[in-house]
Length: 302
Image 1: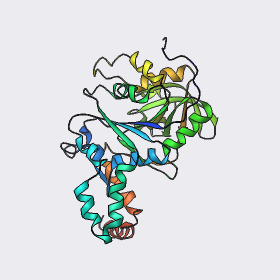
Image 2: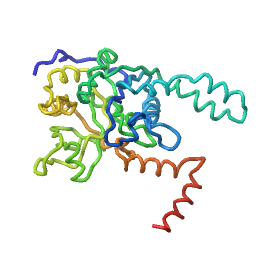
Image 3: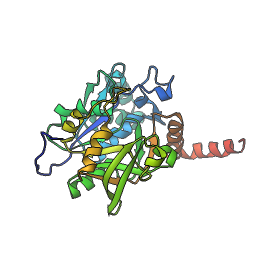
Image 4: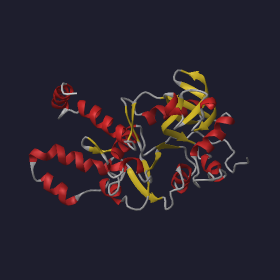
């Protein structure tokens, strides 16, 4: 495959990120009928705020959130709320709450674009081409909240800066989980970084190459856009898979994987949502101890 983008570029600092958030959320219906799944809460913050905070903590300054019809509430969340903020500001006792609400709009420069047709993750990423330009960029999947001491996307950026290759975040999964995600053929490179040689999406049992799967974070060079354009849609769904473009990079020696350190929660899954709320609540400075005591008492009844 001949790419328009087949030239060496000087290493550029990664300051841009994409958050695809156009999915319909069918796995968590009816909760996502009127509220986007990205806005479902983990204790006292919507899931997507965790992603934006992670990106900002990793040095990202500009974020494009890809949405679709009915998700205007996401844009509202990252805007100032004048009446609410003035109400909070008038009460000195509520200053910490005012700061928490007001600072949401200042986490990063946040932009929005619609994916007018739900044609897969690859199609969504392609919508960001004019935003990205010729710079490397990060991708944080809207379903995947990852809690970690060091931002996971920052862990991937370090790998990109060292090896100069596109990079995917991976963890080991069970064999049953792998069949729902993808499997990677990898060899160790250094520490928790690996070279990726092949990717198979939703493998059959005999196709499983390792228990490593791509889980929610990528750092990509802009050549990915030409690869996506040259990726045919799947015959049944009409969707364009980002995995197919990543597989091309892997087979041509241009992809690494980082076995990231962090706890991932699937916010497109009912159990994942409950796990996230439970575990984050236990560490919450305001309710953590009380919630722990509640769980101890609840456990006695099970």
